[in-house]
Image 1 (cartoon, one colour):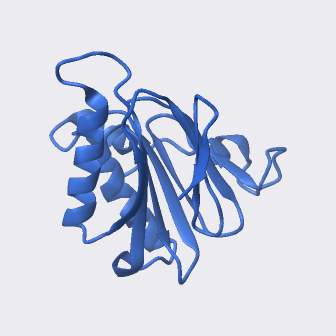
Image 2: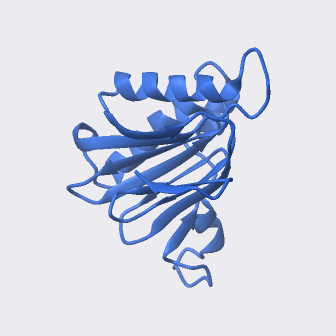
Length: 176
């Protein structure tokens, strides 16, 4: 499967000589990216969207997904843009982490977002969180920390030490 390149890949030239900040990889909506060095993976605008951060602590290989919707398995868009959906995004992220040297057996997850931003009967945020937890459980990946739900948007930074810094729109910040 392929997905749109991460913001870092779009910013840097193939030889890495671009002017982008090499210490930070921006992960856009419906996107995912992997880091193997000291970079910080960041994403913002998490309302009902969910961020799934996976790390293999023994190798330091980390990945971050910013998914909009819970299910893409049965859609063409899920194949074309797996990061748009929780299920196809997690599957693709695990594969890319493994290709970068992580062991799926050693991965651990942190999940953020999934807010209930609008008063809807079938709110997307809670469904995104539930789908992330289902997919991670099916893959045998424990969710070790969560910052989900409520009615507030979030921004996250996934640091090189494997910790996820979550800043809520109301200014409250915590490290998972």
